[in-house]
Length: 434
Image 1 (cartoon, helix red, strand yellow):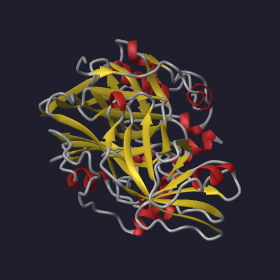
Image 2 (cartoon, one colour):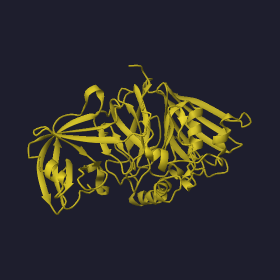
Image 3 (cartoon, one colour):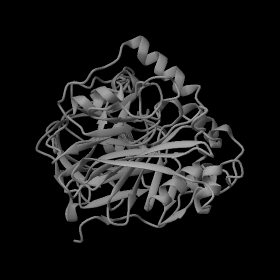
């Protein structure tokens, strides 16, 4: 297999092509000026580690300032995702997350809804959530050979080994089951994801190690059924995985009640046909696909105005680009999604997706601290992040056990409130989605 191969399908999801459209760029000089020699850009680069460079780009005439981390994972580097804490609802500053993981550098991650990622998220093989909303995903294979960005989302499947019954798990730490859905809950959901009332539930405990599926596609783990409970009160997690379905539905009758204590249940999560994927983080909208802008339609919503932004992209050779744009200041006005797509194209991206922005747009480098100028005036605590680590990610395939510095409840509440009122962050995205 060729090193650095970028894999992604060519289908554009309806969410990207219809709901998450972005402006044509009439008011965004960054989008207009990409081919103009009249606009002079100043660039300064430094090598942080073998295969990792940090570049600052300034375009005073726009004005615009942004920062690029260019990582070649094949050169003694690894790309990792990291959560602010072991449960949703926790927040931490990017500088703390990066330092506690011994990272070289990193940027903020996904949009957050009260401490929970809006899109799918997995860390070191553990699926934390299948996501509250559909969007695009980013991942790098465990062996760092393949980089993925596209409008794919996580799918979860189950198999009752005894009966041979296969079933879909519709939500994983992403809400109560509706209709005949099956929803899964784990301790990672914290208080943000409580098991439902008036449901049937099967509690499972791990019965073996994680392993990749056929061809390296999907992450598989066997579990043993502890007990099956139906009742009006919520079932307790007890440290396991709780599969739930509404009482009286086909899912509760045929999937949950088909299980008995001691049964083996095999759970598999995957993102399309992405190979050896253990870390996944989501965002929206998709900016670049197969080397062209897909963020190029009209949008008159304030999310599409010029804002601070962060995003991740991949080049044809597998190089990962992490980019953060300053905004809301006299030295840098920010960019529209279309302008952001153009920046990624200017740096050779083949695919790219927008992450959380506004006051949450943050980049950190070890020994330098926060290198951009967040529009909040300081670091806004985050739910998750993308990190560049030296060497291999030694936490895989086990969940990270690195201690994290969690901010206070007051600081977390302030961060959640700021994100929900920020046009470039969660508030703007959710309003755009309607």
